[in-house]
Amino acid sequence: MFTWIIRIVWLVLSALLLVRIAESLFGVDQTTSILPIPSITGSVDVFFIVGGVAWGVLLTFGVLVGAGRPRRRRSARGPQQLAPATVIETRRTGMTINEVPQYEIFLDVQPVEGEAFVSSFRQVLSAPEVIHVQPRGMLPVLFRPGDPDHVALADPSTHGVEQMMLRWRIAHGLVADELISARTRGISQPASVLALRPTGAQREGQVQITTRLLITPADGSAAFEADSTVFVHPDALSHVQVGSPVFATYEPAHPERVHMTIQRQEGLA
Image (tube, rainbow, N blue to C red):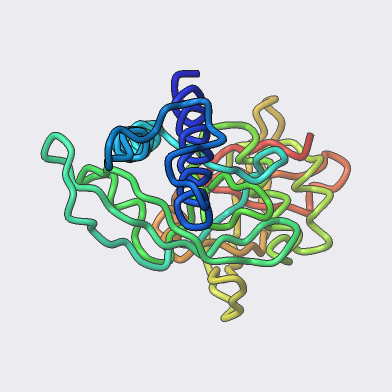
């Protein structure tokens, strides 16, 4: 409110000074004015001098007040969306907070729907946290369509992130067509890896493997073996070695169609 008063007074002074300048340039009798203010004392135009000084002070003060106020940042409309992003580069900014360095993480964001785009965000990361944001690693991020310059890291433990990642994997062909039903509507049961063989296929930076699993249903029914061919991130291969505990998702009516996951995961809601 105070800023608006300053602006109004400044605009009034500007108008009065413009009138006085016009009278000085084009008026015949310089001792008279259409303004209801006695402006000339002797040979000095008192109003012009005082008004000009006041105009300059208000202009300067108004600029300082405006600079001190935080500007509202225009943000893209619409709700935030989740998307997986692949880390391109992690770079220190040179800033530290409580001796913990800040990093700028450059990402290749790949929405479930729409074109991929490159973006970045800055975050303070400790040494253990930096390990999880190395190049080729995947992170869940939040963004608004139409505003690719602003992304934020999403909580990977939330249900929404798990659902988004599954939809993204299906949309990009990382779940075989014959296993989509098992992965989205099946039950998840404990299993262990008996054998592992890479197929040589790669897609979206992930490698395809075929595993032989020993599945142990939680209801106490007999254990059985089944094969599962899935895509996994290269960094996750250390969790899929012979003897590793994993999970097998399948429909009870089709136990031969098994989709392996490293952790227990739900189907689509």
